[in-house]
Length: 290
Image 1 (cartoon, rainbow, N blue to C red):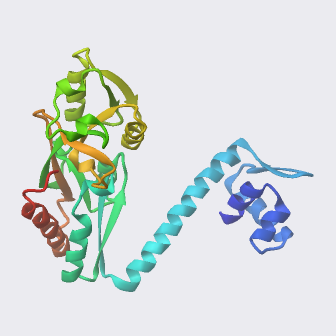
Image 2 (image 1 turned 30 degrees about the horizontal axis):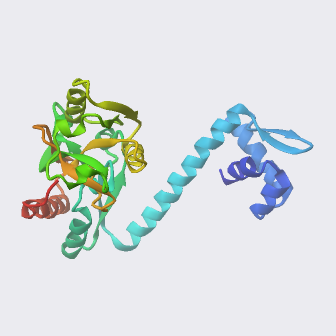
Image 3 (image 1 turned 135 degrees about the horizontal axis):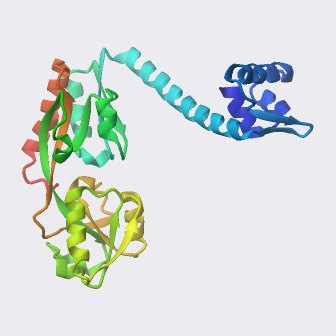
């Protein structure tokens, strides 16, 4: 794996062998063994060095991803074997989605120091990852959990919709933003918006008094807002509380019921204890605006 990736980077057998501290004949032999094993040419040889074949370019790109996954797996295994007897993974789209997670991890470590909490971040398809048993807990919207067998749903908090603007925007001074406040403005839309948010966006656009601009994802949207290209609406659970933008509550009935899902067969006391810590933090923060 390392030999193929290094040669793809240098396209020179001598330099690649030198970088990996082996002789060139040994390096060349290992590359030939790999090509014999996979059954196709990864590199084209010439007097000037090497070049990737089309199949080789695709193959090496997969190898690079595999090497990163392997590196992370080894590091996690080293951490786990040295300190912990059990591990609980929680998957979410962004860190701030479960705002109290760091505090919950700290409190839980005081109770069960030998159980590791592993955050996993996947902006899309986190539910699929959970259903494939690649995570023990997943943050989701309640609407996503309907008709899903073999899961337990734990209600966490209700999240409302906010208008996001630059802090210097006149709307940033408002305590509550309305549809009329957006007339004549450009609204960033799209980017994987959940159904409730799409409904609000559609209602605003249908007035014919609001310009709109399609944005690929939430990070791109925030970049556009920072650049003064428009404003956007977003669920409160995406607020990183960094103070970079103004988050103004938006006057609409739509909201998001945020939940955690676990596997029905997972009855570990450590899992129940961690969920209790996390839910307790949300329940005690009644005044906390999500």
